[in-house]
Image (cartoon, rainbow, N blue to C red; front, side, top):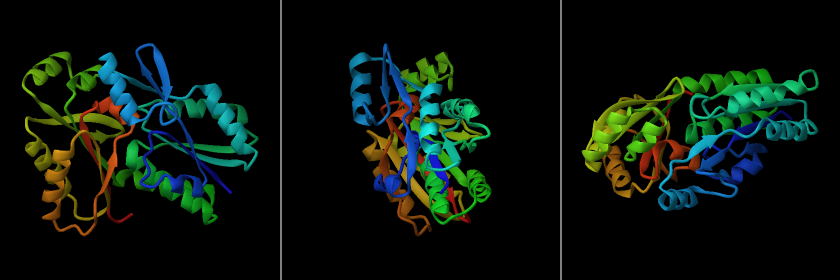
Length: 280
């Protein structure tokens, strides 16, 4: 059977499905000051938030090493000679680039296809899970690749960050914008477009954040899946859910925690929506 691999930037609503579907998850690395952790192995979201508060430092999300990826491929090839790797956007973490380099020694021995998802978090998890289900149904590698690539245009991520120094550190906003915005209590609204975080608007209150997220959601004609990912933003989440309930969509939003790799970008006080547009 075709083996499916992803990175720990992917979020799944039910972690037991990962094992059941035979998905291999390689941990991204989190660097905080002079220490490097493995995401969801020796540090989780709560642990990272505590370390950020303790050290006053901004973490960085790093890919696995090439050697690590080569060992993962070597182990998977013992089980089958076809692998599809679906990874976090290379603009967020260069894991797909490292994965592609690590596949080179296996050319001729196995067929390894690398896909840059152009997203991360729950959107990535959706794509990976669909690929694994298709693999279990016996679909060909070419078919699975077409399915995954076809999902990319229907995935949307919109977020709010209250920690502007994180956005400055990732060069999403300028130092002057971060300083002025922090003084004014600004929260920045961002979307992921072509794999990159793009800042769009600024608001000052949690009510305005919830309103902006509801406006973003209301632009869709049909929604197949919607997840609210959060870190220390319960009031905003509740306000958004109240506004969402007045819209015409029949789906029930999932509420999930932000993972460490997203906290590296958005900070410990953030909220992020993942929307899969209907029709896929």
